[in-house]
Image 1: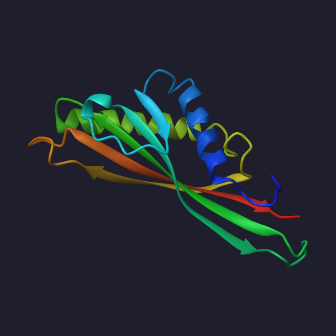
Image 2: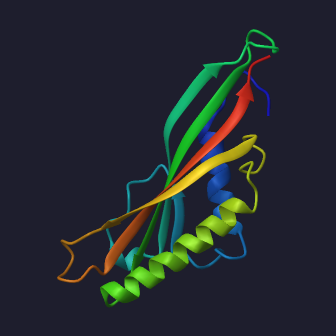
Length: 151
């Protein structure tokens, strides 16, 4: 994709469609949302939120038009699960992450909004205030996308 600037909102909207409509995910999550507050209700899980977090532009002039830039967009997916016990929740969270990553990896261009998925990472977190067990868990899936912009 070559345009003047990358539109991060178009990328997050594409990811909501890509994840929510994928066969591994469709009907599994209570919601796949973007631009909403992070879910705090265990009853609304499994849940997935899509958030843009960073956009870097680096000039690329060697052998290219002087107004060509490389854009790297970082998007965080918040994936949540809740079950009766911490162990069951951990298993449910891994299942939810697997489904999300399967959907993301099905199209590395985020439905054509970027050139490629450059890297991804998973970080885990727990809400220990809900009960004495870790029965409300989530993961932050960080996606780094890259595309060229400019003339």
